[in-house]
Image (tube, rainbow, N blue to C red; front, side, top):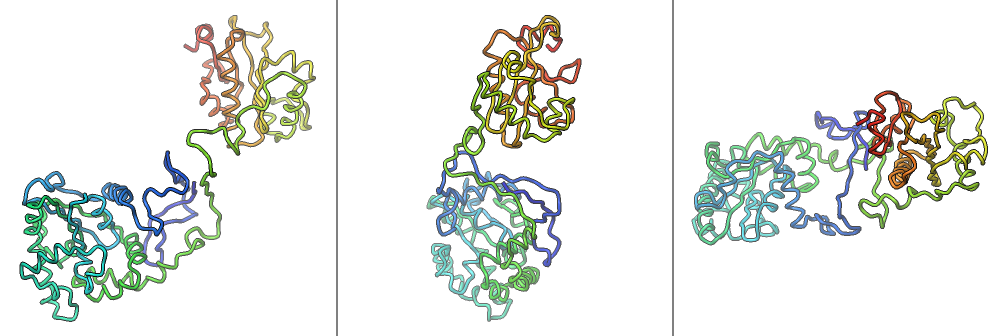
Length: 439
């Protein structure tokens, strides 16, 4: 787990999304069924597996705006899915996650690169189709020519996307095209063009997308900015380039300040749903009523802070003392105890003259020397298991101070309920609940 706060990023000088001074939250990294050393979403080199693309595509789709997806691939005129968004918004990942093995993916950024054929995401089939249609792709890739001439060549590519989609439909393939060019004035300036088209518009987070794009493409963005035609997107690339060193050199101290943070990643060999293993000893080391357990309880009791001992017995003195007045009293008046290395729970017999409404009960005392490890919960579960399987006692009474939130949670977690007539918590056999008025 990691504990840290979050706040909204404001500008380039504040490019972080983590602030330890804000309110804390807890994140747990891990899923049920994961295995040590087995990566589900990443290859050893850091690239995504197909399962990884599918997973992150689903995550991106939760925030994206989708239209007409039910029409995609159903007929020749709706065989192209358009994914629009800025660099770093997750367009490419979403495209690969949504595509099947037979689908054709067009990455516009790759297509318009000068040496597009060297990229692993280059779509040779689409380029071959365009050249057969007489489209001058080389002009669309040339950043040195007149801007209007290049813009016209890029528009010509857009004019053939739908015809390529129909061609693929006849070959049993769907088409996905993704690129920032479709969201600005570089391509498809008439936004009504997408009105009836299967379309996904990615959520734009200016800072997040900048970080993603800069870390992925690095210095290549400096050259990319020179080739962008749309003024707004050109300014966006220039912003990244201006702050690229700041983005790429974020350190741990920058993210978290000089404060430490809590991280729990488990231990090798742990099993999901099994709480009884190291390092938390939930099982009791002894449940017998003997001199040895008496000594163990007293040892634990004396090591507890005075405030905790007073939660068990409000009238104790400041000096550490035995939990019971004598070993004989302990043996004669204890119905059950459960003792572990770091805690104990006692069921002390209630004298018959003090029993209420003819019930036969016990009073609970619990002490834990190491909190937050599930020890109190585990010991109380041992107590409840014993009570459910015996037929001598009808009810367990647990005096709990209303300010002792930890004990109240343990009690409720193990099935104890609040006494409607007092401050105790009660666990009772079914036949005793009517007598106690807690049905």
